[in-house]
Image 1 (cartoon, one colour):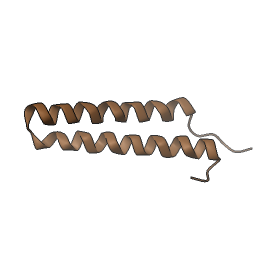
Image 2 (cartoon, rainbow, N blue to C red):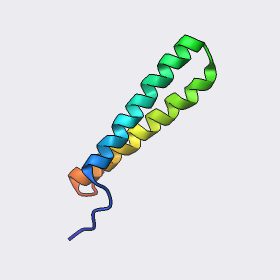
Image 3 (tube, helix red, strand yellow):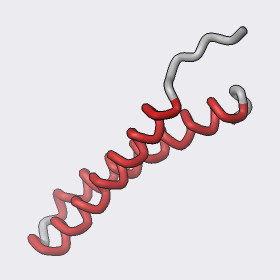
Length: 64
């Protein structure tokens, strides 16, 4: 038996939070014309990537 460290729901929540941050950062960067919102876009993309890796690791059994 392998130890399960993350739930599939938690990984998908991380993905959707990342999507929300990316969309919010994109809208704010466009509306306010401030380049500082790019950091929010980058954090959102990073959260999405981490969430998908956790999700795939859980589905494939650590092969990802």
